[in-house]
Amino acid sequence: MSPESSLNAEMSKKISFFGLKGLKLWVWVCLVVGVFIVMILCILSLWITFRRKSRRSSSKFPFNQIPHVSKDIRVDRAGVQNPHPESLYIEMNDKSTGKTMMSHLGRTKSSDNDTLSQCSSVNHHERACSSHSGEEGGFGSAGRLYGGGPVTASPLVGLPEISHLGWGHWFTLRDLELATNRFAAVNVLGEGGYGVVYRGKLVNGTEVAVKKLLNNLGQAEKEFRVEVEAIGHVRHKNLVRLLGYCIEGVHRMLVYEYVNSGNLEQWLHGAMRQHGNLTWEARIKIITGTAQALAYLHEAIEPKVVHRDIRASNILIDDEFNAKLSDFGVSQALGLGYVAPEYANTGLLNEKSDIYSFGVLLLEAVTGRDPVDYGRPANEVNLVEWLKMMVGTRRAEEVVDPKLEPRPSKSALKRALLVSLRCVDPEAEKRPRMSQIARMLESDEHTFHKERRNRKSRTASMEIVETKDESLGPSGAETHITKPEKTHE
Image (cartoon, rainbow, N blue to C red; front, side, top):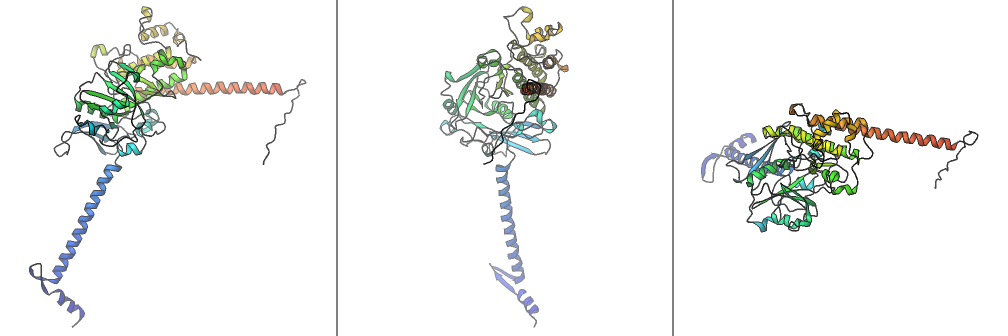
C-alpha cells in the first residue's frame, strides 16, 4: 500500500471531537486552520483600527495652522451619536484637498472651579510645534502679500492640558485673576466701550493682554464660544494672536498675546511720543502691515472677516515697528471719524467700510492729525474733507505732519495721498480691494528703500572723491600710501 493512499485513508477516518461525531479528519483540519486565519485577521483589523485612531489624535492637521489655501469655516451642532451631546464642533473644509477637520468645543462647568482652575489644554501640536499658517505665508501666488515672517515658539508651552480647544487655551476666572493680580488698576492697559484690557502674566511666565468684555457681558455661552472659536484659528504675522478665552458665570474674557510697544494712536497723539516721532519709513511699514492683515481677513479665508473698527488705537506695534491688528472678528464699536458714509443710510458694515476706515487711518499717519478735531476751524474739523480741500487747492505738500523728519519725497507723498483718496471715495464700489492697496503701499516702501540706497551711494561717492583729492600732493602728484601688510602667525 503506497504512502499516498495510506494518508488518504487516515484523513478520511471519522473521529469525534467536542461532542461532534462522524466528521472526517480532513474536515477538522480545515476548520482549525480556518478559525486560526479568522483570528489572525481579527487581530490585524483591531491593530490597524487602533493605529488609525492614534494617528488621528496625534498626527492630524494641526488646528493652530491655517494652510496656504482658502477655507470654509462653519459651525455644526453635534449629532445624536456625539458622545458630548452638549458640545459644538467647528468644521473646517480644505478646498484643495477636500479634507475635513473637526474642532471639539467642550462644555464649560463653572461650578467645578477647583478642577477647572488648572486651566484647559492646548493641542499637543500647539505645544510641540511653532505657529505656522498665515504667519509663514498666505496662499497661492499671494503668499508674500498675506503673510511671511519667522516662526515663533508657542506662548502656551508649559500650561496644563485639560480641555481640547486645538488652537489655544481655555482659561478659568481664577487663572486670569492670578495673572492680573485680581485685575488690579495698575495693570490696566486701556479701556473703552468694549471693556477693559489688563496686562497679565501666565503661570508659565508668558505676558498676555486680558480683555474683559463689557458689551458681551452675559452673552449666551455657545454663541460667544462659536464666535471666538471661529477667529481662534486665524493666524497672520500682522494680526494679534488670540491665545484663548474665559467663560465663567456672566464673565466673558479674551486672552491675547502681549504687544509691548504701544499702539499707533499713542505714537501719533499720546504717551509714546516721548520716545520720539515715527519716521516716514516706520509709518509706511505700519500701514502696509495693517493693509496686509486686512487683505488676509477679507480675501484669504472663508468666510471672510470684516473688522468693523479700524482705528489707530487698534493698531498695536512691536519692537521692530511691525503692525499688529487687534479686535478683528469681535469688535462692535465704531470709531469717530473712521465710519464710512454709507453706514448712515444702510446701517451695515462690510469690507468696503473697512477700506474707508483704512483710508482715514492712512491720512492720520501722514498728517499726524486726529480724524475729527473740534479744536480746529470749522473747515478743518473733519480730516478727510480738509485733505480734499488741500489737494484741490494744490497744497498737498502742506498736509504732512510738521513733526516728521526727514520729510517724504514728493513721489512717496503723492502715492500715499492717492491711495488714501481712493480708499475714502464716497462711492463704495469704486474703492479698491485691500490686496490692491497692499501692493500699492509695498511698491511705495520699496521705492523708499531704493531712494535711501541711492542717497547712501551718492554720499559714499562724494567721500571717495574727497579722499582722492586729499591724497594728491601740492604739485598734483599722487602721494602713494603704503598699506600695512597682514602678518601671518
